[in-house]
Amino acid sequence: MLKIAAVGATALVVTASSLAYAQAPAVRSLERVTEADVAHLTDARVNVVKSALQLTPDQEKLWPAIEDAIRARAKDRQTRVANVAKEAAELRDRSPIENLRDRNPVDFLSQRADALAQRGADLKKLADAWRPLYQTLTPEQKRRMAALAIVTLRELRNATERRRIRAEEDEDEF
Image 1 (cartoon, one colour):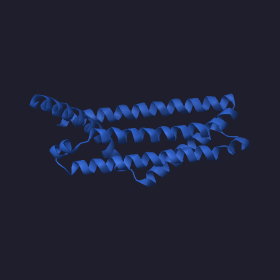
Image 2 (cartoon, rainbow, N blue to C red; image 1 turned 120 degrees about the horizontal axis):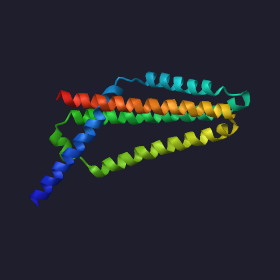
Image 3 (cartoon, rainbow, N blue to C red; image 1 turned 90 degrees about the vertical axis):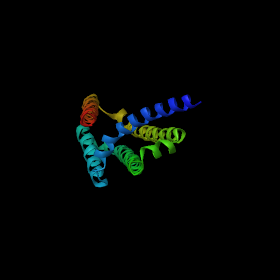
């Protein structure tokens, strides 16, 4: 029995510490981002997409739903990030032993499921908002939208890679 408990505790420590460490760089860098920064970044994203598409007056009428969905998605993401930062701060204030002893993996899974469901709902709302406008886009506008999506995905991949490298560098320091 003691052996099983020791193996379970070891597995929990190894798993929890890597998950907690994986979150640390993101939380540290996001703590410096204010709500105003997020609002400005969202404004810039909305303006880039709208400018790239060069919407016609008829298409402009379909744009507000998309903009609302983009802004709601950004707001919900900021709320999730703030919640993670708050939880991380609470965990930092406690000892690792307390964190392991009081950890509830079922609650963690439930919170993760709720966050993923919220992200899914936001993404569905965005897709539903885009559908009517996308059907009216010209082939040229669709090409510009595809190019913008490729650039965005490349930037996301690069940011993820930079975060991974920073995490490895931080790990090497210890």
